[in-house]
Amino acid sequence: ETVLTQSPATLSLSPGERATLSCRASQSVSTYLAWYQHKPGQAPRLVIYDASNRASGIPVRFSGSGSGTDFTLTISSLEPEDFAVYYCQQRGNWPLLTFGGGTKVEIK
Amino acid sequence: EVQLVESGGGLVQPGRSLRLSCATSGFIFDDYGLHWVRQAPGKGLEWVSGISWNGGSVDYVDSVKGRFTISRDRAKNSLYLQMDSLRGDDTALYYCVKGLTYSLSSWFDHWGQGTLVTVSS
Figure: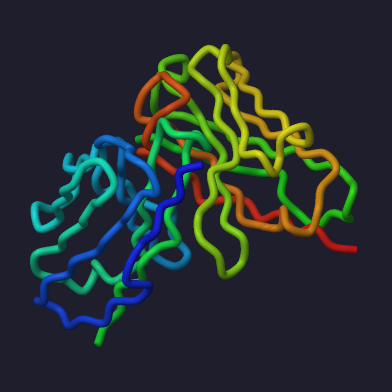
């Protein structure tokens, strides 16, 4: 079973600051990793797929990197609408599709 | 515009059944895999089940295997989840989700607003 571990659990930052979120897989997932943004009362939103590809409509301040077991989501300069919970997700390794536990990006 | 609208949630006793439905529109139904993802209260996201574009491939998370059945109806552009032998740990908000591609293994590019299932006596 591929377990995804996200860190930190909570990131307290101010608007304009850089956010760096980590996702570590228990075994290699190649570049089969995605990131989702989830705000309270809303549906989750795909941000990054295949480790580094921005989804449709996602601003350029969001970027993803990594391969194998270590991945990073970077938000270069936080906007007020970016404060949310972010989940990573892998596909391909059993269980077929799994999510990490999430990182909450909150306003400091 | 892609739309996914779930229905069928509610309060149900342990051991009973419930059938979730998801009406879709705004995309070519036969071209994409579809999934159910849930979020228990205060917890993270958990993929529950998925079905490929033609229904030829289905899969489930271990905790629901043998109890849940996913299906799709091209005539109605709808996705379903038959949930039997429900347990308390099935309590969650269930999202209907569209895959980015036709296959079972995919990213999720559109999500519904969810339907709440509460399993309690």
